[in-house]
Amino acid sequence: MQIKSTNVGSPRGRRTGLGKIFTIALLSVTSGGCEHDRATSPQVAGWTLVDPEQRHPILVSQQPATLNLHVSPSADGLTPMQRARVLEFANHSRASDSGNSRIVISAPGGSANEGASMQAADEARQLLINTGYSETTIAVEAYHASGRDAPLRLSYMRYVAEAPNCGQDWSENLARTYQNTPYPNMGCAAQRNLAVMVANPADLLGPRTMTSRDSNRRDDMYGKYVKGSTLGASDEAQTIKTSTDQ
Image (tube, rainbow, N blue to C red; front, side, top):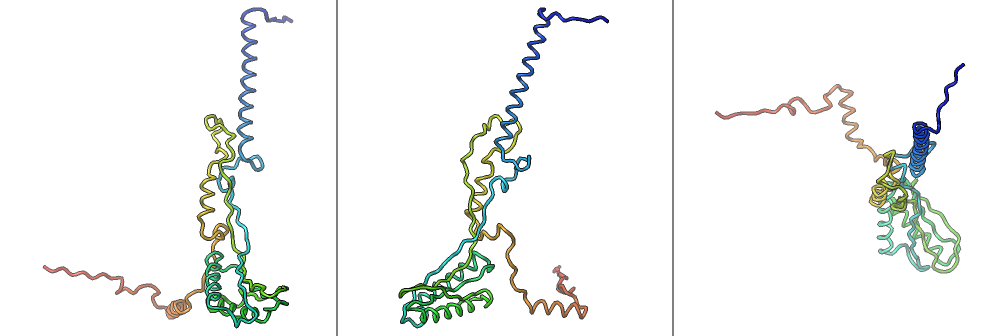
């Protein structure tokens, strides 16, 4: 068996050895740069998050909105100003919550104004019913209080959108993105503006509840369907008659 030997001391052998060392070093630096790019991007189960809604989510939670009304022990129900505040509070509840939450009327019990507060609570409940709230969406309860001027409280749970914080992570060099992946702050400003501008944060969770149907119109169309009449416009209404004068 003939064994061929390579002359390491020759110029050709030295060039080959230096080339291999340079290639290995270059691969190490390149792989290290790729690992750095992957580490700076948010990941879930090994996948890089690309959607801004997932990278910078808007947190929607429920927080109580409360209206305190001070009722005097000698008061006879609500004052005109207090009735106006109850109606305004009901309008805010309907606009910000789409009627998905109950309004709770809490009257003080054990205080000097207990009797007057219960009368005011009943009047506030009647005002809410007159504005379109059903009896099932209004709850009246008592809470223990002491003193002379314990407030009458109206409350409901409203949705609040919490905007993400932007501009805090600039760890990635935008001039050297080897994987061309979204940088950490990409899409955060749009998400923050949406959270600040949305009129009803409940819309970010799902569609609003449907309003009641028009019973008269529906019964009329159903009667035509049973009789076999035309449900749409008649042929005469669809025909456009034109006349030209010679």
